[in-house]
Figure 1 (cartoon, chains in turn orange, cyan):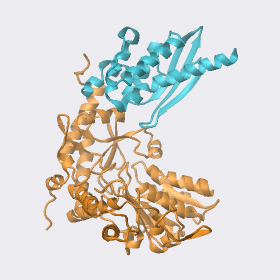
Figure 2 (cartoon, one colour; figure 1 turned 90 degrees about the vertical axis):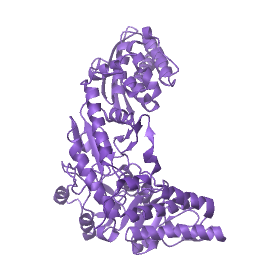
Figure 3 (spheres, rainbow over the protein chains, first blue to last red; figure 1 turned 90 degrees about the horizontal axis):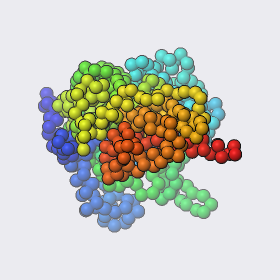
Figure 4 (cartoon, helix red, strand yellow; figure 1 turned 60 degrees about the vertical axis):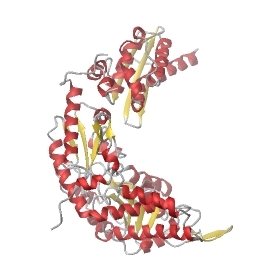
Length: 421
Length: 150
């Protein structure tokens, strides 16, 4: 038997969670935006800067060797964490957006008119715009999966329309939707892509932080995620790729470290992953990401996923009791991550956010970098509460109480207290 | 300051019952303004006749602050001269960007004084300015096209 999940012990590792916002305790429900950081991660970064700092690869002294070992150690740790077969398959970028731009830029290089790239309408802008730009550059056509009314990828419609066909060269979809929380059947879509010889890319920005990850089980060829959503620092992202695929791709950004031999008449390029890492990489950030991976691994990704699943089920049930509240996406915690988007009748998300913020409750309002999905769902914008390993039942209760109050305040069901001055 | 002080009863009243809402004919110019950070959108029409603003009509999606501010603005500028409306814009903008140090003359600004609290919430300044920015843009365009015709 594994011992019970001790959320209070987890919270003690995150000093920020003990702070107050005005008269209220902080209720941080914006982890899908960025997660908070445990002291272990902050300490690892501080220790790197205070005791081992140097540039990597090119500095031939003790500190240079230590920094290089730390940076490459992080690469090895990331590879193991996502089930990669070798560490050279892990490319460090500055964030998931850069990782997806790298994928779009290099994969689209040989494409032309008549070729098709497939995404979905539930993607984050980061997994739409780079492909739109690639299509503009090459003349390829962008197509997309629709979603069903309950917020799942519409595989039947895709099948009917022949969405994935012999012209499809790349399929790129989110593993877990940052708005709907939907967990997409990535391995199934990957099989569809591979059946027509297309490359399968996965935006795992919301998936890797929430679920145990195996790139082999997902069946993808490239996978992108970011460090700051998994308790790591900002400024570091990861593109994992099958080695033979990475080896076949052209460079993305040019500069130091990505070359083999540079002559004024032309250059040759380093093998992966260095071919894709121009300039000084995010070294301290890699050290921080390594510490973050060790931190969540020590708790256990399966246990973190189970905790989130339990809380998401509770939150979905409680939130649906709020008058006028509509959940976007699956309303049951089945194949669903911990992002819950919603609208509150008669209250704009900006106002919901402001009212909750005044009670120390941090959520996100707007279109969450997924405007096409909001258009598709017929809502101008929405609110999103997103949970993580440190979220408690009490925090969900505070959210629900705040939403009840907000709804009443704006509909005039409350006697307004602050009207007179 | 508390959030309840931000959401003055006057603001909530204009939010629930928007004055002059809906797009109407005739009009001289129509402008579209957006607030990309929160997705608020506003289409606004202005009609000027005999040197006075004869109508301001609009269709808007947005938060309570932007909706109420547009509603209040329309009441203040309709019937006055374009020059008066542009002066009101300057005064309102100065107050809203004044971080709480600038107050409005209630006689001149009427319900718009309820937005003084918004100046304490920098993230909401753009919301309060959306309608004002749109009407200013529309009036300047009307003036520019009038000059061209001369």
